Length: 268
Image 1: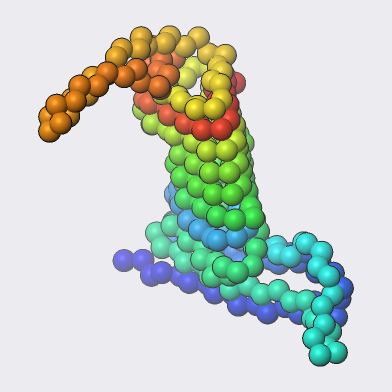
Image 2: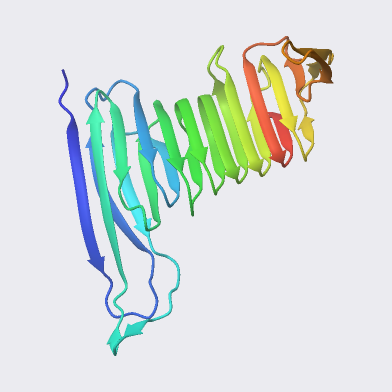
């Protein structure tokens, strides 16, 4: 059994007697993989801040963080000047090529910049004050945000991307065969580009927006759905609000859901 490698970084950085807090960028650590020639997985979940993950031609996971960046008025108390300070409490664990970054700094924004080998799966989430950006990754991606955007650029594999207040944009160079995917937002456009050879069953719905595509999608006929409540004896007929169709003869399900925004399904 492989041992768990743990790297912990605790920093308290004082920026001095200043009137404005300037952005501070810190190189944190490089995390070696147990099996550097195999694919791996990165897991990051934090409360406040952005997550940027970029592929590179290396065999370690490299983590950098930045914080601050917003101007603050100088404060004083009982004649004492405020010392602007920032702190980090971040640790990393690696086991069998699964790397987890743990950010305990819940009350301050921390923007993470992470480099990983190209063949890497991702599980990323953030809640406030940040976007999630991924570039050049080939793997299975599970991405979640609450108050920010999700952007996937030149990726391969499969993805599930969900945000509440922000857009979802993705551009795939290639996709995993027979892999289902889902892209959802509540407030913001959903814009996804696939290779023109995509074979998929499309299921899309936007309550307050429109649905667009440049694929030659064959729409399924909408048949009434009947529902019967045996206890009350109620008989109900309704037309399903989802748009369903097939691209290039059909394939795995691709789900697109939006409330207040448009849905764009593009061919690369």
